[in-house]
Every structure is written in C-alpha cells, then in structure tokens.
Image (cartoon, rainbow, N blue to C red; front, side):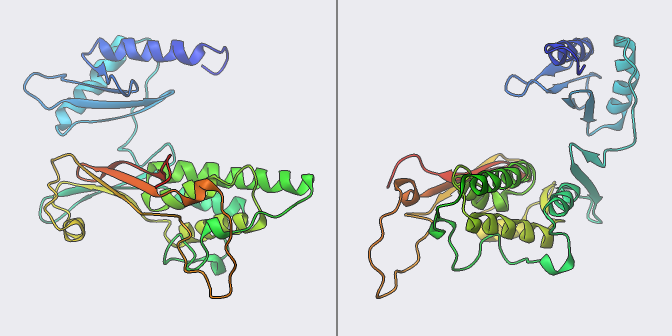
Length: 293
C-alpha cells in the first residue's frame, strides 16, 4: 500500500470492487463515500473510506450487521470491525441520546489542538484565552512587514507555514470559527514578520481555551441558530447561509495626526463567507474576494 507510486490507486480499486459487489456505489463528487441499500425495504448504508480505514453508518442496526457479515465474503483481505467510532482522522466523535428522544453527535479535534499547542510550546495554563480568535484593535493587515536577514526570514516563513498548515486542517474539519482569521494570516506566509507569528499564536491560544468546541449534528431544531438568523431552520432541509463585510479587514478609524498610508491592493478587498447547513455545518468557506469593491 505504501510502496509503489500507484499502490494507493490499486488499493482503492480493490476496496471499490468489494463494496460495489454488495450494492454500494461511490458518490460522483466524493469517490471515497459509498452508499446503497443492502436489505430491501431497509434504510441505506453509508461508508466512508480513507486509505485502509473506514467508518460506516445506517439508521437501522440490522443493516450495519448485514454489512459486517457480507463484506468479508467479497474480498480476501483481512477486515477488522471495531467498536462504535470514537476517533477517526484525528476527529473525536461524541454521540448523545437526549431524554426527548433526539440524537446528536459532536465532532471536535481536541487531540490535534493539544498536539499543536505542545509543538509550539503553548501548552502551559497561562496561555488560555477564550473571547475570540481576533485580537481587538490589532487587525492582521495592519501588522507592518519589516526587513529581515535572509536566515531570519526563512525561519519565520517555516514557522508560519507549519502553524497555518495545522490551522487549515482544523478550520476545514470542525472549526469554522477560525476559518476567516486563518485565511487572512495565510496570505502572509511568503513575507511574514514577527507580528504575524504573534497573530498566529493568538489563534492557538484561542484554540486552547476552546479545544472542546466543534460542530454538532442534531435531529432537532437548532433554537440558537434560529434566533440568530430569525427564521426556522429545519434539521432535515439543506440550507445555505452567506455574508460579506465591505472594505478592508483593517477598518479602524485613522487617528487625527496619522498621515495617509498606501496599502496593498488585496488588503482593500472585502471578505466573503458561506455555510451549508443540514442538521449541522456541512461545508463552509471564508476568504477575501478576488475583486476590489
């Protein structure tokens, strides 16, 4: 599997063939997601594969049992079926059955966040901050780019890229609240200053104070969300939300004695974002617009 260049492709074709023989078809837009009906009249089964790991789900336990019995008969590979999923790809799954009969599942990345904090020596108790991933009064776009020795520049570039790589993974999986600030800081990876490193570390401190946060999928109406958007949000309906600011990220009012300052064109562009909702946050993006308003 980890040998020849084409080994992952051959492995996927092997797994795909085995799953298709039991009537599970790959999703056209996400070929690692399979779904299908194993038992006539029963709910479908969904399978997600990642290299040689996979998770599966059906709202009927008998369908899951049928999958566990059928799959080993369709391949010569050894397959181990473990207990209900708790961690997958660094994501912690916490299911809850509520007293009113509704079911919810919470996804978070506490382990990834704690490892990230340890890697950057920010795991001590004094580094916790919780209000927001932004520093009030310190817009990232206002951080000056200063002249540095080549060796120092390379050191800062490597450090910032390491942090941004981890933040990108966390922000795209379970933490839409840091998507905007991660995108803004990422635009300075090629010419960072110590101030940009400090801004990235502030996000890490924010994550330390909120490491248990994530996204939750629920079968009941989300009252806080409905209160915020001011209209009903049904848990069984796909609903998109979008918004944008107007103008630069640094929208602070200039001081009386400040002289006009020329800024890079990209800094004057607005920031757009959207979120797709179906009982929970399915997909989200927050980034600068490609044109100047």
